[in-house]
Length: 461
Image (cartoon, rainbow, N blue to C red; front, top):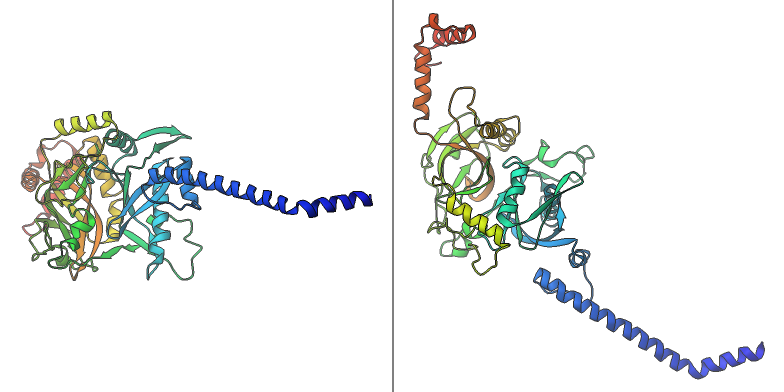
């Protein structure tokens, strides 16, 4: 035993340097192999994301992009910035919105001087290679889910399948999303446990989200339209989901006090120049009530190749003519739609609520916007016998009447403008007022007419 131990020690002493060299060589080979593998991954990742990557390590998101489970897309937060975000390659629309909202909360809003998180927001989908105003809102308030899925297939060629009882969409690198923020919730220094499980969009403590932008004379890059891509009112058809935009740029005005009705009457229609807000009354105002103001706005259908644009449109981000279509069948459908679609554009009465609270209420399914969509889908008249043809919901921009560098986004209801609407309504009223009650056979109708006729005066009804 002693001899064996001495022999082993002798070999170690004589060949220790050789073993050390072999060990170092093995480590060098492993390192070389790892670097070669990472270099190949870097090339593949750069081809997917079109940006340089680290030669040493990859983030979890980058590894998921390489594995094909996630895809990197562009996210625009109008009024703030553009970001690149990794989302699941195949997922439901609500899942994608949660990913994007969380990314905005974690990387932007929570780092503000007054930390906050997204409450009410709309997600809008467009795609590289098409005009950026050729898009679809991924919100059931605006367009039913079935129509959303049909549109993203028809417009952009994205696939969708039913999985676990839910519709999953397969996104790709050409997708570009816009998260339009209407309201936020201020994050308290001491978090409340009571509000953790409440949908932020339904919380009563949300406040309007505003952003600040200053245009400077002789500095075209500071024009608001260059920051937001365009300052046109956007809208989408309740039934078809087709996208429209106002024929002229339009920015409304608002006041923090909803009782200050005069502050809601100014409008700027500046194109390729600084915003100019005229005196109240210049905004094609059709009427004003307790909860909202109504403007008249003309809109046109947007096209994937940018054919809807003219001298009033910003000359940036128009359809990328050098890009290959997403797929030929989708592009053909788009062209067919453009050639055979509507001759008439929208001449709309645009209803703007005076406050965030009123806007959130009127968007509810049981309230005005929900009723308008159901009437449009069912092609019915309202209870007052008035012919109200509701187009859809719109998304517009407004500025503080007392601080024209402060802006916010608003959701609006668009109905068909009819110049004979009030005349028709008055004619019906006069017919009912002149009706001889003895000739009315329906008892309920006779009592209603009797009450109206007996209580009518020249100053009130």
